[in-house]
Structures are given as structure tokens and as C-alpha cells.
Image 1 (cartoon, rainbow, N blue to C red):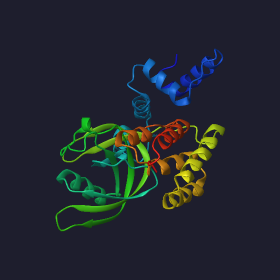
Image 2: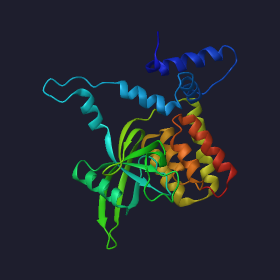
Image 3: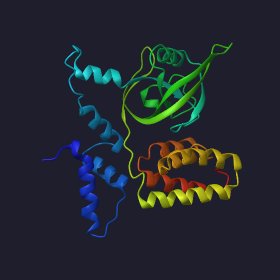
Image 4: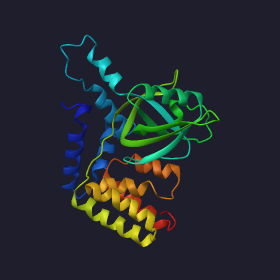
Length: 269
């Protein structure tokens, strides 16, 4: 009998079965439906749970239990940000002024420079806890750091990949245990067609600087997901809408949402 770890196969079977009955679901919709059927809040929570069940191969030369090694490898000092949602593969300037956040950055610099950047649900929270943060953020690498005269830190980060927060430890600073974020449908015909539509909408906006930066990123690998993230980063929508784009793992659905935002707000790009 299948269990929750077979969720992707179950979602595929569900899509194929419903298709024979003239009911069409996207890949992400079928994943969300399976998550609900299995009693999880959403696909990201189910995906994180599946990842936590995966044990790394034993290392004969190590006396540290495999589960402990796995947790250590997937824990990152966490930088909460108030009024920005970051997307993958960008160079982003950020500021750290709160004592816990500065401590988290210092820990990252003392180790491998990796941090998790995650957006606060309410910008006004000065001491955010796990409940005050969204459940998906970005892993990032600190490339430069400057300590300012007022005690704050300006850092430049290179954002890397989406990550699902499995658990947050709040002392002595925020540390997140993370799991990979599931993304899908990056190169099917629908994704490619939507990519063309997004590029056309971008050119219609006639912002030469933004067009250039987006096209440069897209030309690097021709991935529809890369295009979606590059455009999402420059949209003029609100934080909740941007976070929704960050949490949309299905690339086709993400491109569709971006097109809707671009069409409904001519000032979005």
C-alpha cells in the first residue's frame, strides 16, 4: 500500500484518471489535492515531511548518527526581511540591524556564508518568531558585508534556491531547518508558450532597463522558471502576491499568475 512518500506518483495517477473523465488538473493542483487527501496543510508541508523521511547513506568513517548529520547540513542562520520578497539567482543588497539578525549573519560568515532569507508576514514585527514568517524562503550566499557607523550591517547576497522551512529554532538567533522546495514543468510546450507571452508583455511595458536585465538572465539557460523569477522580481505587486509567486512550484502556474498581474496592472513592470 502506498504511503505519503509516494505522493508524486499518486498525484500523477490522479491527473491521468481524472483526464479520462474530462476533468483537467494542473500538476500543482494535483499535488495540492493529494496533500489535502493525506491530511497535510499544503504540498510544501507534505514535501518537507517527505524530505525529512529521507536518510543519507551511512558514512563508515563517521561516529555521528545519520539523522544528526542530515539536520546539521540543512540548518541555516535566518535573516528575516520586512518589505521585500527575493527570488533566485539575483544579487540583492540587504540590511541587518536587529541584534538576533546580526548574530545570524555573523554565524554565517564564520561558517560557509550561507543564510536563509525569509519574508515577514507583518513588516512591523521587530522580533519575529516562527509564526511571523512565511514558510518558504531563499537560500543565499553572503558575497560582501559592510558594518555601518550606526551599528547596522549592509550585506550583498547572491540568492540561490527556494527552500521550505521545516522547523525554526529561535535562540540565540533564528535558525531554520530546511528541505528542498519542489518545482516542476519547466520545459513543456505550455511553459515555453507562456514564456513567449510574458516576454511580449514585458516589451509592451517599454521599460528598456528592466527588459535588458530580464533578457540577460533568460538567455543564460533558456529556462521558463528563470524567466518567471526574473520578471517576478521586478513586478510592482504587493508582498503577498510576490510571496505567492515564490511559493508557486509549478512553473506553468507561476507564469500564468505573472501574466495576469502584468495585464491587470500596466504599472507592474
